[in-house]
Image 1: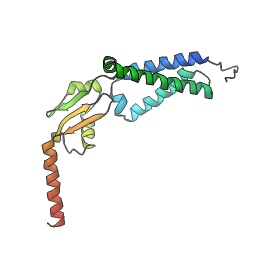
Image 2: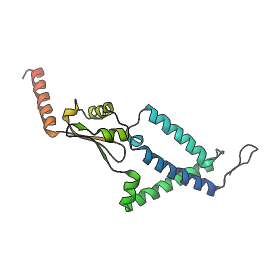
Image 3: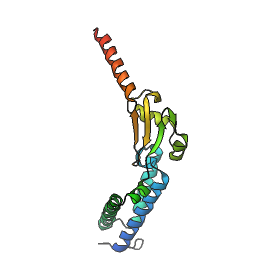
Image 4: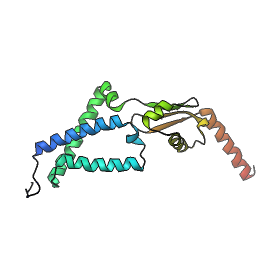
Amino acid sequence: MCHETLTHMCLPAGEKILRTVAIYLFLVIGFRIAGKRELGQFNSFDLIVLITIANAAQNAIIGPENTLTGGMIGAATLLVTNYLVVNICYRFPAIDRLLEGREVVLYENGTVNRKACERELITQEELMTAARSQGVRSLKEVDRIVLERNGNVSVIVKEELTLHRILEEVRELKQVLGR
């Protein structure tokens, strides 16, 4: 139950629901326009933006009140709206592609796709960071790097180099063990 004060007015539950759906749709479109980077590969600036957006969205959803009921209505509406959107995307692949986009090849066959990296705001250093996180020493060992639809970066290592490196490491271990 909401208690009115001189400085705060209660929002009806229906308005809270409409505000929540509007903010949800705005954020879905905004993150789609902003690119996949905002979804998967966070840096400190991205985190600051995300926290600030969460605060701004919370204020827009339940208005000036801070009641438990208002928060629960907002949260429940977000959960239901998200369930409906995910369900629609599952049933209609064209809508899913529109909202989620497609994967983007950032590196392939020894070449950085500069246009794709520029469009997604991913630097060559970030490509190397993603590659190193998969145990790769240089891009020469990489077959492809793909920015997935969910914002994660997949690094596909060349199989022959992986096998070669494993054999190298076995030889090194044998030398250390004196065999």
